[in-house]
Amino acid sequence: MKILVTGSAGFIGFHTALKFISSGHDVVGIDNLNHYYDIRLKYARGAECGFSKEMLECGEIVQSKIYPNLRFEKMDISERERLERLFSTEKFDLVCNFAAQAGVRYSLENPFSYINSNIEGFLSVLEACRKYPVKHLIYASSSSVYGMNSEVPFRETDRTDSPVSLYAATKKANELMAHSYSSLYGIPATGLRFFTVYGPWGRPDMAPMLFMKAAAEGKIIKVFNNGELYRDFTYIDDIVTGISAVAESEPKAPHSIYNIGNSTPVSLPDFINAIESCMGKSIEKEYVEMQPGDVYKTYADTSALERDFGYSPSTPLLKGISSLYRWYISNPSLF
Image (tube, rainbow, N blue to C red; front, side, top):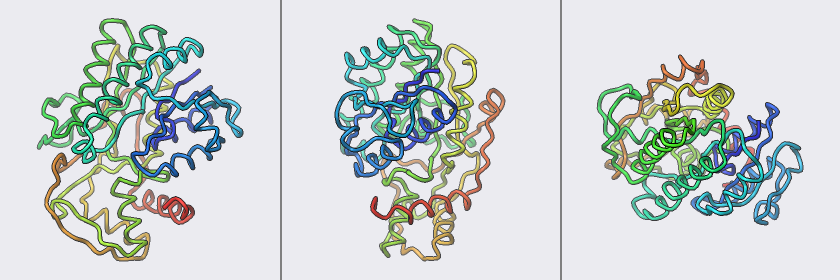
């Protein structure tokens, strides 16, 4: 297949692109290389894929120096005309849209960036898929759409009309937009609600990396809601295996939505203990109140994904944290 991966310099997009090229697919990656977090990490991911900083930034489609079936072009998905030219030229079979402005707390301070990327940008992707038909569109949604739902585990049939952050609202909007385009124009689309993904090459603004860096530097970490938080931490390899299973199969319906997580919520103190155990260091903690936009607990019911695609996450927390730590200490220049 010829596959477009948007957000290919991001955490999930990077790993997904590598999975696809290892399976022999022809992959084109695009990313706007924004500075939401330290750009050095995106450049380093690019280097792993065979692209120098100069190649990534040149603004033209470039060929990987490592993988003959991987190319990249710096592009924002909201650049509608450029995106449609790319679709017209490449004639993609599959599109994986992982480009988005991420982060719940950041949305409180920079709301317009979420509309530009997550709404206008996603509309550009949908329009390109309409004008230049693809066999399947897979797009990233989020567990944040469940808001403050108290009944767990979260199921795809639960109500998702009470988001507690703008980020969550844009992700719910993506689901509605994809559903409407699927209904109107016959675009086969599958949304994946990701649950707290972690692992090597992960985002530095997420708890796993923040806690690990604080432990290494002897700094204090803030523990929100006085530690009374639970997250369904899911290792990146399990996520990518799930994405690949969906990509390699026929769409199950004109538009479908699936949870993709670990189905094992972990308390924040237990997660911190796992990091301390792997690093052999104690982390000094400051217990603070719940932050606006945060949710108390995330817990995925993944039975639908298991039934339809054989999804079965298999990475225990300690194993995943150990892998993350080995990567962390091997890349000191990134931190």
